[in-house]
Image (spheres, rainbow, N blue to C red):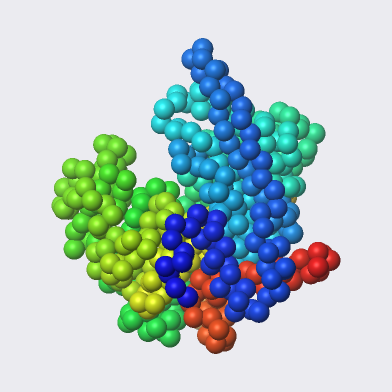
Length: 474
Ligand code: GLU
């Protein structure tokens, strides 16, 4: 296919073009393909809030791309560049994402046009609660039908306000805390949700490096250890991904790109220290032991083994795709590579692990949180001490049979019962591994599929179309 006919696609067109490649590989009926691609419903709300004695009108959206499974799920972002097309594109990615990792939700997404940095905490609370009220009243937010989560510009704080707003309006709903995920632990959140997307990215990369054929096809060799990585974005997703890789996988993070430039150090950057510097100075500028460049975009083009865009959409486009010098792109952000760029990178033989798989760790742990809310009990609460006792009995039995003492460190590992965080991480790891294996098998077993992204869409579309079929939609 030619790249030249596809200039300046919108985000949702870009996603749909990517899905089309999968529909073609599957010989899917065009009517069914259109039904799957279509955004089911979208609401725009305009609401006034009194800010320092002046009325300001805010605009927000919530799109439900699919509701073959309920609730529909997806984050709410607060940003200055949100628009309807972006929200629809992100909602459709949520549909595919949930299907890829077998999370039984439909796809949704929300956005509020706002610069959060311009408002005080109390003002943000007023605005968030008002937005939530609009969505609740119009049927776009409830534990059974539509469950938001954090995204760009939102976090635990906003989720707590949303949960409380829903509870005030629906005190009789016993499952009220399941109306939103990503809440603080003290308000029904789950341990490990904040780090989940970044951790999921790392689990995805680790699984890739357990597949020698895929490593070879990407033009790489060996394991993850020693690989040179460039990461764009040290926000919630990028920070946890980079920190884990840096501290546990013996890689070299040779460049970190942020909105005000990039830090480069061929010997590797200490991620935690960079983050502390950003927290303190609100910029990456001035970090010692690194070269700073204001041209962050140029750092995307540094030669490396793995490039992890973990910030905004449309960062690798037809304009810079030819200059990207990596073997593997791991899409931690949603939509960082446009359709046009994807075509160029594919023709250059660069392997891409796609967003709808790579960053699905967030919604996976959201699913765990939602289940926790519906069951009204923390994971591990019933069995932890029982497991601990069984571990102790096992050790006693081993010691009396062998007449030897189990060393202290081993004893502690065997005895320890799993707590909520252990279970969340185990469930997340298992989910990412299984999803990768399904993608990899699909890629290798179908001649019409040449890349991981198309394989991911095929896996997702196969599950979604089966579900539509079972429901009698066609
Ligand atoms: N905003 C995240 C995403 O893009 C999380 C969605 C969720 O947990 O529902 O996947």
